[in-house]
Image (cartoon, rainbow, N blue to C red; front, side, top):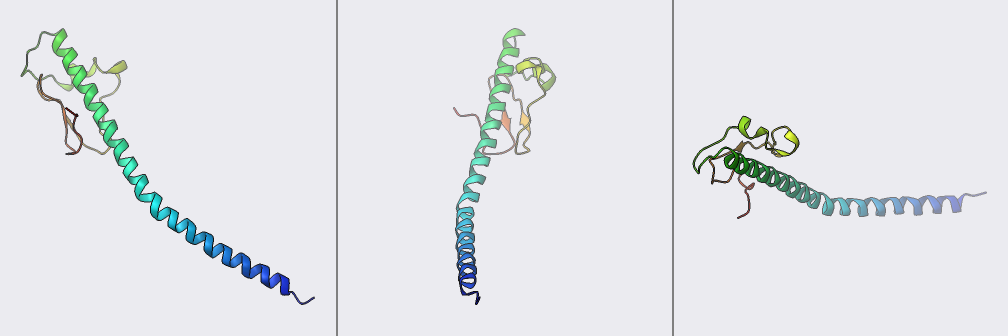
Length: 117
């Protein structure tokens, strides 16, 4: 019993482990930035959806209360017009929402979060 086969098996397994760790490292270098971009895009889309809901609530409030362009509702005024009377929407990136006057689009303090025209 000299153990030559066991030594060769140990070397092969060691080299395979090094090769696999390099493959995993390369995949993570590629995947992590793409994951971050996808996460940021999802948060932006969630914010835009919140802005759409605020805008729809504002338009419905104006219609039901005979408000004209230029009049600004409060958050309390719009609360009942949000879907299922849910809590006031929050920007996923920590921005704050400005309701704006009737006829103007609501805005988020995060510059990239805007309603598409």
